[in-house]
Each structure stands twice: as structure tokens, then as C-alpha cells.
Amino acid sequence: MKNIHNYVEEMFKDVPDSDQKDNIVNDIIQNLEEKVMDLMEQGKSEEDAINKAIVEFGDIEEIKKELKVNQPEKRSKARLHLDFSIWGSLLIIALSIFINFYYTPKTIWFVYPTFAVAWWPLALFYRWLSLK
Amino acid sequence: MISSDIIRGHLDSIILRLIYEKDRYGYEISKEIGLRTNDRFQIKEASLYAVFQRLEKREIIESYFGDVSHGGKRRYYRITSLGKAYFKEKMLEWQETKEIIDIFMEGLK
Image 1: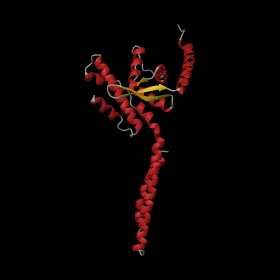
Image 2: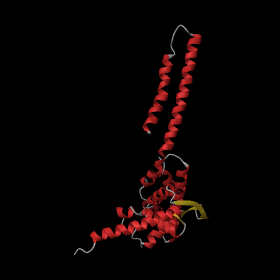
Image 3: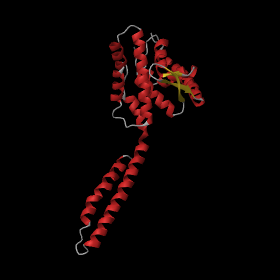
Image 4: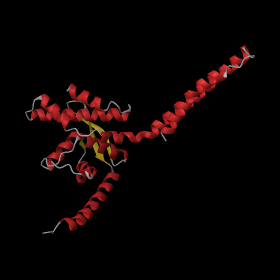
């Protein structure tokens, strides 16, 4: 029965983890195992039964399509990451400004780290935009 | 075995009908479909679980854990009152559709 387990896990590999996914994976494994038992009772060998169950499973894309409607959730997560990156980069910039003017008020260098750090929220901003 | 788009368009109704009669679990439904159609139509597990997802999201069916089988607890599906109304609507719609298509599909020599 390990085959069935691995096969189903493998199929759902690229679906992001969620309770809904766990439920559906467990249900499908159980369904297929019952089918295999049934086929074996009808006289098939375990290997044949497992192969038949797997071949007859059908197109996984159908289920993935139903699971993918959770886009808004993904987007609010992206929003959270964006907020975090903005606050994080503001703190880093503020710190470099402070160090700059406190220790070396004659040379202004804080713009360099500022530009470097700005890529962080910028990248996450475009990620957030693309999920619209 | 037929797997035409016409049947695919009515998978929701086929499954709802079986759950309407009594609460059932996944494998029971696919077995029952094969049994009733004399294996002329068999539902693929992938389609079955896609339909469950869709109907549960629309609150047409709901699920709960029932008795224990080989692997673990079975998830049973039950039709909601919204689901019953929805299925009755679907039945009327199908009658209507069938009559209309029959006008064009029958009687030609």
C-alpha cells in the first residue's frame, strides 16, 4: 500500500500546503486503498490492483483547479510580507542614517545602503501586484 | 465506456443523486455509479474529488467522519437543504433539456 501513498503525495507535490490539501490527500489515499482491497478480493494480485487503481485515477488537474480558488489567501499573505519588508527596510535605513550622522557627519554614505535595501520591499511590491 | 463531455457536465447531479438517497463515502459513490450503469460509465477518482470540493464550497453538501475502514476514518458526505433544492432544480432543468434535444435527435429516417 506504500505505493498508493507515495503516488498520491507525489501528485500533490506542487500544491501549497493547507488543511484542505491534507484532507483531500488523506481521503484519496483511503479511497484508493479501499479500491485496491476490493480488486484483490476479486482475485487480482496486489501489484495489478494497485496499478489499476492508479491508471484509473484520472486527471489530477481537475482537483488542483478546485483547490486553486484560494488566491485571495495567497494575496493577503503577500501583503503581509510586503508590509514586513517596508517596516524592515525603513528600520535599516533609519539606523544607517543615524550611524552616518552620529559617527561620520562629514561624509554622507547612508544613500548607498538605502538603495541596496530598497530592492527588498520593491521586489515584494511587484510580487503583491502580480497576484491582483 | 463513455466519457463524453455531456456526462461530464452532469457529474454534479449524478453524485448529488446518490448522496440525496443516503449519506455516502467516496469509494461507495464510485462503486455505486459503476454498479447502476453496469460499468457503462465509471467515474474517475480525480473527477469525484473535484466535484466534492466544488459542492462543499457552495454548501450543497457537507462532510463528516463516519465508521472506520482499513485505512482510517471514512469521510461521509451529506446533502444540505440547499443541496436538495438545487438538485430538484437540476432535475427539472434536465427534463426540459432532454425534451428539447429529443426534438432534434429523434424521428429522422
